[in-house]
Image (cartoon, rainbow, N blue to C red):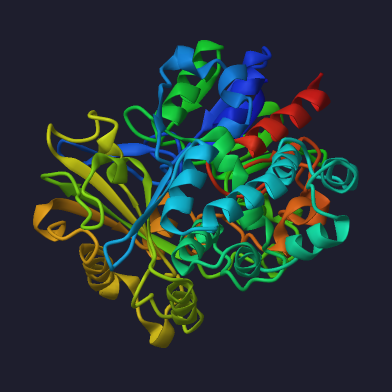
Length: 508
């Protein structure tokens, strides 16, 4: 037997699963079709002298887990740079808002700008800190009625009455924000932060997307020095240091099956046998293509909603730092920059999306991590990412992203230019990752960075389906990890860690 476990795909969750298994003494082989590990957590020099992330950039959720410490990733080259302020929101009238790591400083700042809103923010944080921590605990184990009940229903998850808590948890997150705050600028900032998982502010049962906001203050926001992909590079070094094998440019063609059990993989003309297989690629890729035809379930795509994508990002190399008209300081460059003037702008963008049109007036998240990391760009230069929503994969009237991509990227830049004049003149190179690009280059079906839509019917025990929510596929010895599984997309690694624990339990 070639390996104890074969892992399909070297996204960060697949690598995390492999790292735990290798650290426990098992022989692990990881096989990745791209020429670099990391999947959507990877970094490349796209413009000479500039390091571009190709997927997720801000490391938030993973710092709420024990993964970095349990795998001792600092010993394998991972160095985190803390960001503070956490968030910065500029507005067309020259006003701006900050959210700092320290709650007291944030409350003082908000109170000085909008009397009463600082106190409201304090009440919001106090009301939902215990709940947000309980939600985080549910992410760190396979989802079951027992685990959900223990962490959410029967524990002290909020200081509100059970009636008030349930009412807010089940409401749209836009309505939750309206209950606490009056200032439209602060509402826009909070709604845009909550919208990053995809659903709009009016989505029923989406309250938790804003109710875990207190976790930003707990875990903070950080960046791996050298780029987001330094996390997955460290994971690769960890696996190899523990005797594992990581192969790139090695696309898996098929999961081998013997006596109804996963028994290895085939890569081109080579077969690799193993006691178990972990698939970290998209769930539909696993079920529709990697399993041999005789073992494929019937029409899995009809039971799992990929959706229509929802975001796109233009990555820019600049010959000078970005400067906001509302605040030209380096604090604005350091924070995640929430460029959204009103809640109505989010709703209008989502309306375009429902009509299968790119947002004509997109809200934007700006990220300029060269403000804290001088390895990303030449001295005095900048890398700037502009993430916008909502951008559907499937366009109206048969339009192709190949035809409109440049114009849509220009519109994103023009929208941003109104807040940071001079940005366009500073551009020396760019990459536009529209939904079709994300599908072609990162295997994100229909451009959905979450794999499957993050609506309540596809969360917890329903992700990716009721019968596969425990990280076990439709065959014995076939395991699942990645954004298709609980708790979903984002740079957290909880899926990889949870899957590893399930595999370890079965192998021991």
